[in-house]
Image 1: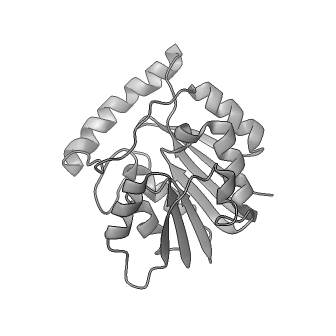
Image 2 (image 1 turned 90 degrees about the vertical axis):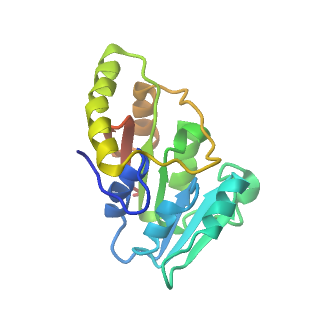
Image 3 (image 1 turned 135 degrees about the vertical axis):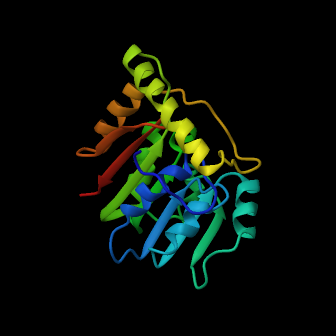
Length: 208
């Protein structure tokens, strides 16, 4: 089942952490996670990037991330920050990161605004990976969504059920799969899009 496997706890977002980690370029110096939650993915990123900046606009999530132990020698900087806030510019300089990622966060930002900002933060040649959610509205989308149910049941039994961090902000996606697909193609020419089984999509893009 696509992606699969994780250390730490399991849920539909953590299921796709291996997909994100596999895209980190060799010799990555500076990685950025947008919407880090309790820091699980950022801690994994610290194993494959020399330095990781992880931001979230939820003060509670940043507190949880800072409390958790990072791997020995890891350089992970957790910051309470809204990437769309213009005042965040000095803390997140444009063109500074070799790798930028987000998981289940883009629908909180808005597809167009979030992708533009994350693309701006990448250096030329840098990699952006987004795993996101969208709203199901068309009959074909409903069919794909239904196909995820058996996969969820198998994985749920395998991992002993999903674990969700306490206090994690939750929002229903407003944009449909088609809207996100078209917007991402317009903003990130040449991006790779894939619909995933567990009610997620992925975007992979290299900045020219």
